[in-house]
Amino acid sequence: MKQAETFAVTVIAKQFNGKGNLLLTLKRADALALPSYTPGAHIDVAIPLCGKRQYSLCSAAEAEDEYQICVRLDAASTGGSHWLHHQLNQGDSLTISAPRNHFPLPTSSRTLLFAAGIGLTPLLVMAEALAARAADFTLHLYLKNRDELAFSARLKSLGDRVVYHFSSENESLRQHIPDDLLFIENSVIVACGPEGFMQNLQRLSQQYGWNSDQFYTERFKPSTVTQPINTDSFDVEIASSGARFTIKQEESIAEVLEREGIEIDLSCEQGMCGTCVTRVIAGQPDHRDDVLNMKQKAANDCIVLCCSRSHSPLLVLDL
Image 1 (cartoon, rainbow, N blue to C red):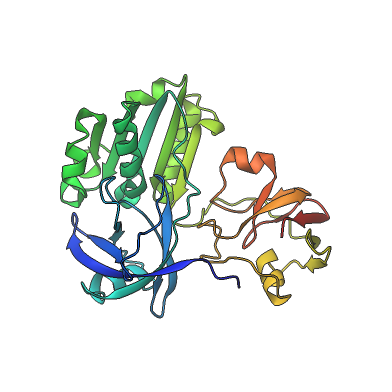
Image 2: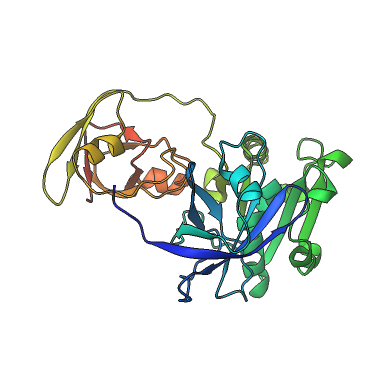
């Protein structure tokens, strides 16, 4: 596997940030500058015995020499959030990747941000960037209870641009539909949250006439929506060498390329993080990921190697 750029960082602060949420502040261990990033970016965090986990960067704009991530304790955690909450201590070291951004803030005259739970982390940075340039936006934040609110001071500074919805107070998206969804022209929806919330928001947006190219999302877990899958074998060609390999029904492109010694970046291996996105020179990908947006998938000029397949007999990859 090709190794992505990584950094050793020190946990300089560990603090609670709303019930169930842990805010970690990280500084580079060698005191050099951390890479800059744009709203929507995330990093990989290497967690002992658990592997890599992806977390959105949520540092305030003025925090140029540090990164912050906010991690919710997941009752169904396979170890990542549990380890960070209960075993990581201030002063400990972690290894992280350089930032990647497959969820960039789109350009639009009007932006509606919809965050559910810890889905606030990338959208808060987007909201602050929009506020800094006096853009037209509203952030709708959905939580179960008021005590789960994270980043209260930063949200307060955004004033009435933030609309709070608490399901314990009958304000969930299923119980109340924001009037903002009625106004579609020159607008985009940018959303992050659990799968059920995302599916409901997408259904509502379609019901009110929003087009798929106005809807930008980032999910916590791979989509559970059942889709027809092309399981036929196909070939991939490496453009730089002309080498061809057959991808069988039970194999992923990434598995075959790694076995053949082709260097690729891999991380989540679930079509979630975007680490293995690769340019397609020829052929028609069968997109199976939750990274690329509708426009990117329609363009058919890139593919997520860990999960996607091919509609065409041959894919030529820019490797």
